[in-house]
Length: 140
Image 1: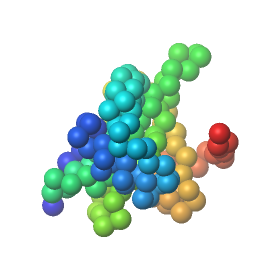
Image 2: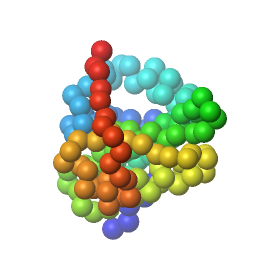
Image 3: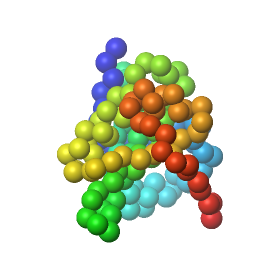
Image 4: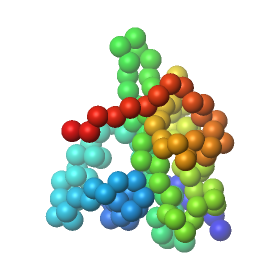
């Protein structure tokens, strides 16, 4: 069983949105908006998104957003890491993390940051992340 990490493509959009909706948040845009959303999403040159494919099925997703800081450095922000519940503890999340880490290195990032729920801390520590401060959000 080999997990393939592929660049996010429009053909994976429904499966990715379903994964995110089921596992991370309950926001699911109407299908009629997919073309418009994809056009905007894919036009952003600072976003690198990947899917994990196993047996022709999307079993994971993750994205890296690269920010150029005021002093010229680049920071990567990892977002929306998700693994299908039937494929947990099979290396899907780690494979996604490694692919995003390599992309951050290629793009010259000096650090990668992410926010996660407390129950995911041990997973990210296994991926060599360390707790650094607190994450906070304000929803609009």
